Image (cartoon, rainbow, N blue to C red; front, side, top):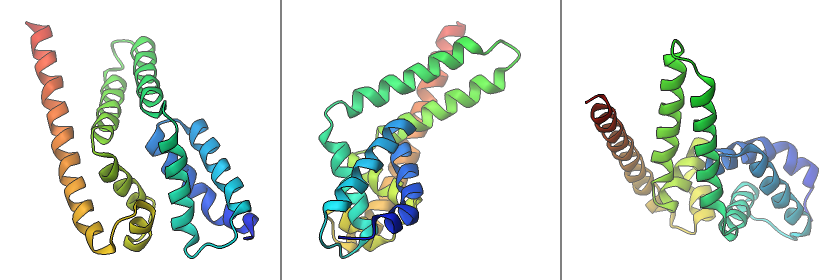
Amino acid sequence: MHDVDRLFRAYNEMLVRYLTRRLGDRDWAEEVAQETFVRALRQETMTNERAWLFTVANNLVRDEARKDSRRRRHLTMLFEEEKERVVEPEETTIERAQDAAMARAAVDGLAERDRLALLMKEEGLDYSEIASALGMSVGSIGTTLSRARRRLVEQYERLQQEQQRREGNAAS
């Protein structure tokens, strides 16, 4: 058994931040992180604590069949609430909300492995920890991250072009 208090103090904030980015819902992220630490209580040995925690958290999320629909509903709801609240002079608020929704959609549009690798790297995990959490070889992580970044940019640009086309069609 590990000193779960120490694990919690060292990794909870990072894990919740990662899960919030992955899930789009901080409350849900905190629930998954909490369950991850509950499972750590039962774990006899961990060779790499951070990688183990991220692996368990990823497995918990993956096991929940509703993850995709819940995340999309949440983003749609936030965007709709922002649209209803914002009045015309606050154009920049609308644009920021649209950009944030578009960025989230671009991340969501990535393959799961690419999305997870990027989010873990953003949280400061090193290549060996990412490889361990995703069940990949350490040598493939650099390539995976590079391709994921390129795909993210392509996805975001494609979404921007679609948005511009819709706005152009609406103005006609």
